[in-house]
Image (cartoon, rainbow, N blue to C red; front, side, top):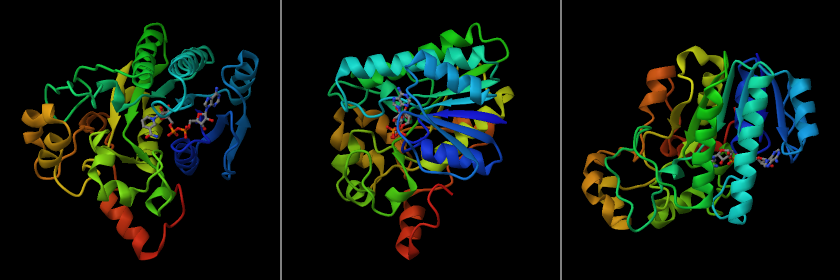
Length: 304
Ligand SMILES: NC(=O)c1ccc[n+]([C@@H]2O[C@H](COP(=O)([O-])OP(=O)(O)OC[C@H]3O[C@@H](n4cnc5c(N)ncnc54)[C@H](O)[C@@H]3O)[C@@H](O)[C@H]2O)c1
């Protein structure tokens, strides 16, 4: 099918574009920044907040599926008003255009930060966090993601045959980052494991970019298996931590102590069970498998 990926040059977008192309789709990748050349993928450089440019992109790509990743992707990376403005306007523009151009499926990237953890008073009702757990964002990025989720639900109310959904990827680790490239916070995966304080702020969640990409692909390939407006987690089944979370979470977030008892035996703080039930998706890569593989001889082809 014809699939348009916004933000296709980004950390997650590069894997989404590559995975969709591998699965035989006709992929257009649009980004304000140029991306790597991927065989069979049409790369378009455009600012999706520019109405005329965006109209041209949709007219040329005629997408049947849209994966919306473009935006400001890191909390506090830009001034708060800019983060709110860019992320929320992009979502409305891209998702309404997706419906208007006749796409059958459109999915937007949200974030686990909508839960609002990493404040002194945040207390989970239960762990692991699933898609039913209440949200309570506290920074502009998390709020922009919750508004994106609400935008998906709003557009879904009149989207006709187009199924809109949300994926909340965990802390994305791109293939080259397993091999030692810095992650989005500037330190390496090995440093994040060695110093639990670095990963505590995200409750030790993570996901391999290619695994997350597979879920985005499944959602556009099988809209009939997804409820209109549905939210799905894409988070690894184990934490990015060398010690179990029933031990680590109470140390860094005392208010989680009671609920963290459920996370013995190496369980993660987030559940992606809904994606498994709806689409048969499970993450295939863990930090243990990827670090071992890289130690044994380098990565065998980024984004493969
Ligand atoms: N990286 C993570 O850990 C993570 C976790 C959860 C959710 N997400 C979400 O996933 C998505 C992708 O994240 P990422 O890590 O790949 O981020 P990224 O910053 O690497 O990629 C985002 C891309 O969007 C592009 N972009 C921004 N404004 C644009 C515009 N006006 N027009 C066209 N392109 C524009 C950027 O150039 C960039 O390439 C984002 O929505 C992010 O919020 C990321």
